[in-house]
Length: 188
Length: 316
Image (tube, rainbow over the protein chains, first blue to last red):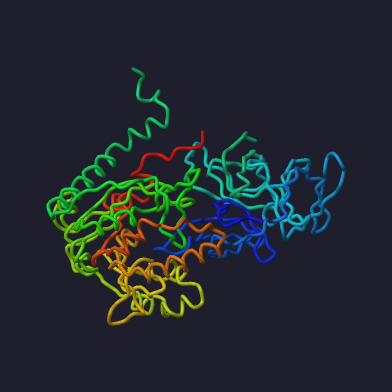
């Protein structure tokens, strides 16, 4: 259990059986009254937010969270399978939970998987991955402006905005946190 | 002489604070001058004390084997009132264990003053005159620039009873909030954010239960003679028409110590010298405690107390 004085921005707590991260925190002490610990909480599974105010005598549950480094192996229908390189244990994570992150999974890439009460709830990918552009309008020769963008696709169908000078077959770097183009790695 | 860039971050932080510290020093000297000009005597009472006032939610840090760092100079200054000192003020450090945040530090500087024969309304007029005088000297006449906004100290202050503020901004009554044990939550989440910020705001006439060391109003004993000043939505000062009846004071000390115990806090030793002064007779008086760094923070347009204070010392 946490006591209210342990609360701070970034701390992960359990509220009504779900894991939450504290995204905003304020210590208040109005007048001669009791101290109040005001928190904005974000549900680590659904992303929904919650305001909670605690008093000094309140106790807050610690969430049962565990982070493990796993390797992405293969996908099997709507599930993506990750394996533990030491125990060879296989963990299946649904496409629904991974969302857009499925587009940035590279075979054998090491990812950090977060478990809540033994169930995977999120993964953290390598920040940057390199991908080949499979489809885009031909680039304008000599146009090196990076502020004018056009649509492009990578091999798995993911669509993103790239600068005009990018051509089909070029390798680009994608920031997996935002899903956006970061830079060109090499030309076709 | 090392170049500026070679200096450690902590030294550069102090150098960057010099303008704010100079502003704060000027503010403090203006306030001192105002008190001197109005016949107040500066006093110094101990920071290391034997018996803090038994506040329900304020912790004076213990100093073994049995002393405390004062959370306020209140009890000692009231002993001076009992001894016949009529107009006294003090600027000095106060300590509150576990209070840390944008608007809190465990050690801060309190301006506290008492005037025998004055009531809490007169005290408010004095406070208004003092702040207008200081702000005009610092910023000239006209609304005072405070960060992104301005506060007009010379405009009529917004004085609201706690009851009106709760009804107007939170659609509830202080009484109902106390009964459901959420007075502070309502105050912080609904009332304070809705208070006007373009001029000083005063909340007054607190429910008797929240009067702390204020006397009750003669015409309505359900209310205490207490007001709080807000600047830019931030609580700056707390004032009382002082409670001077020994029996009622003892009753409240017992009540507050009981609350402390129910919250797992130790009761403080009995403030025997203060109680003896009360028995000997403290004249009718009014007093106010004002957080000087909070005032400096607001008047210099800062967002956090840390910006106007020396960095906190870490454990060594």
